[in-house]
Length: 270
Image (tube, rainbow, N blue to C red; front, side, top):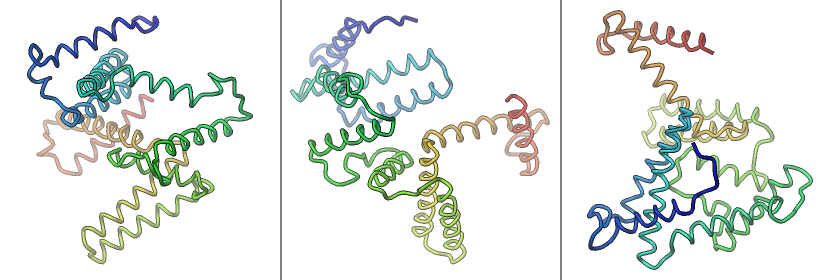
């Protein structure tokens, strides 16, 4: 695989292909009718497929999926260009300027005394950008559509920047237990579903806060654990099949035995 500098002609070719696909007379009917809104589900899907390829450490798949994601960016940029809003060069120029602005220690000979000072400078620069965009409020600029766990950690991080935070992760542990107890209490008292849902949300919020303080991306951690559960359960199905049992026919006890066997196999491989 090539590691040479980016080939500008490859980018230009991709932009030209997209323009041709959107051509009002000779383009593809499906491509011509797309909008930012109609493309959004595909963009999110491609992002998740990149994440999946990265989780599998599949180099070829990462390259392929990044191409699919780049297509969505080029597609949206072409739509914007047709409407006279902006173009791909504006996108590239904007992110380039942002990178230079946020890394004065690399591009402007600024020297920071410590990593903590550099991190604080980064946040100060980002705050100035939000002010320039007239994004008011501590949580301005955090997208509502962001996955809930990731957004929770973003919100908590902003609150921590003004001093509203725990001193260490150990202090969060009792809070997690407290929120779990409140769920159990709400269920025991036959509270409304809305109340139970709210209390469960508090559990997840507290858990995501604990993850943040441990330096763990809660969204990524849950995705990894979900995939681990999925693979382990696939192995459970295989083990049951060896005993001529289907998932539907197996008892809970039989599935538990297979589950523990699958766990032991995993540990033996590590």
